Amino acid sequence: MQCYNAPRLVEGGNMPNKTMRVIVSLALAAIAALMIRMASAQQQDFSKVEIKVTKVSGNIYMLEGAGGNIAASVGEDGIVLIDDQFAPLAEKIQAALKNIGVTDKPVRFVINTHYHGDHTGGNEALNNAGSTLIAHDNVRKRLESGGPAGNGGSIKMDNKPAAKAALPIITFQHDVTIHLNGEDIHAMHFPSGHTDGDSIIFFPKNNVVHMGDDFVRYGFPFVDVTAGGSVQGIIDAMEKTTAQLPADAKVIPGHGALSNLDDVRAYTKMLKETSAVVQKALDDHKTLDQMKQAKILASWEKFSGQFVNTDAYIETLYNSLTGHKGEFLKHN
Ligand SMILES: [Zn+2]
Image 1 (cartoon, rainbow, N blue to C red):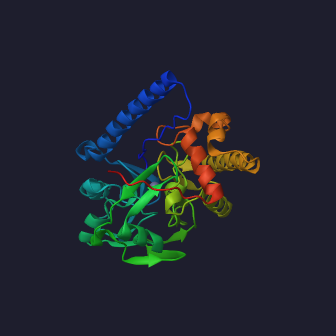
Image 2: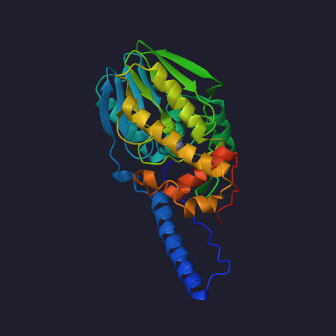
Image 3: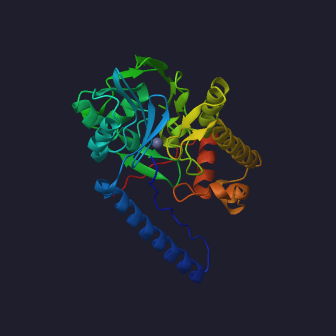
């Protein structure tokens, strides 16, 4: 998931009227900007999206369109997809796979790295076309039930229950291996990372890994604390993964450009350093507002993005480290 922000409540306290008026008008402007952004996300014109195909290594390809990056193992046995972006793109994705020119065989399996709609939106169409959907147990549970998502603070949204045909029909608790195209494609669950159902997918013969949204390139990561995610879980997943991969492994991030293990290490370092700063502030009994006001993450400002800005990331760390999942307010 990449682009859901919700308005932040502004508390007036005992401020002078003029200050209050400025704050209220700023807040209204922010809400207006936000509503425009949400509307444009909902009405995103997928007809204009083109699917870009990049050969990563051997018979592994990366597909970029809108939403999370897709990995594809394309070979004599058919196609295995990791994630499938948004529903309206399913046909274009199938056409792009055919265009690679390696096989006319169908997508036999889809593994979802996690439940978010920008990674599972194509599930229903692919299932209807004959693909078998596979994911961690919690992906199926969260798709089936729908429910709140967010960082436990200012980023929040509500997911509708998915259609039956969009639900993975094979689920696993720890890991699963698909033996196709001469490779042991291995999906391994890492607990409490970007969500509570993330898997990292290894293509050992091709020396490629798809990290789902545990590793992203858009700056401070969105962590779905409300759905059981935590920054500590991501750090753990990144450290375990980098320790076991060859130094020249190619890394497909959940969002952003094809990467390598140095990129993953730099990202992990940022997560650890920022976690330590917020942990220290917690140890010093600072409140969330005090942390924001003191700009305790000013040294990492270059990671502040449109989607997860520094304040939203402080909330993420605060909620991750305290186990606070936030209160979810339903949209009207
Ligand atoms: Zn996500």
